Image 1 (cartoon, one colour):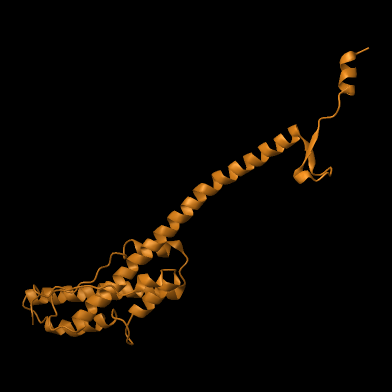
Image 2 (tube, rainbow, N blue to C red; image 1 turned 60 degrees about the vertical axis):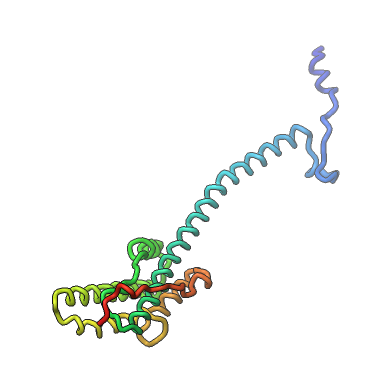
Amino acid sequence: MDYSTLAQVSQPPAPEYCLLWIDHWSTCMTRAEWSGWMQAIGAALALGIAIWLPWNSARKSYAATRRSHLKTIATDVRIADRQADVYLNSKIKVPGYRVPLFGALTALPWLLAEGKLTTPQTTALIQWYVDAKSFNDSLDLAQQLKKDGGLWEGEIGRTRNKANHLVKGGKLSRFDDAIKVLGQLGLPANSLERIPLRVNLDDEEAM
């Protein structure tokens, strides 16, 4: 007689442990079975966390980069509004008042490459930067004409028209459209407020 086989047959079944003490076949397993399930669940959780952590980090980094680009454009628009307003209301016409274009080579191309802008949004932002650069170019031309003894006064009218595109309000304003787009893209309202800016006119040359 094979006594080892007899011992295995006569050995009582392993005790089972039931989930929430619910005595049902679907909720009761042995200690070894529970251990296997716990290991499988733990491995699945570890895998999920390993996937989620870098994804969440990348998502936050992307959101921060996007917000930074929006703020860069908003800063350009607000400062240009201030500079153009001072230009329009001052007797000093050259050579100051250039507006910053920090976002022209960084923020705007990034947003365009993102591919989420609508056609009107794209047009509004590009048109604003075109007008801002045109304002700067007109100022540079007036300054150069004055330096060379040319008829620089004739450029003032064109520069004023370009300045009207950069100030808030009015039929010619590009400011309102640009600010509206920035709000649509998720820039907080408090980031769209006009920033205080002092313009030093002491060194400027009066007409």
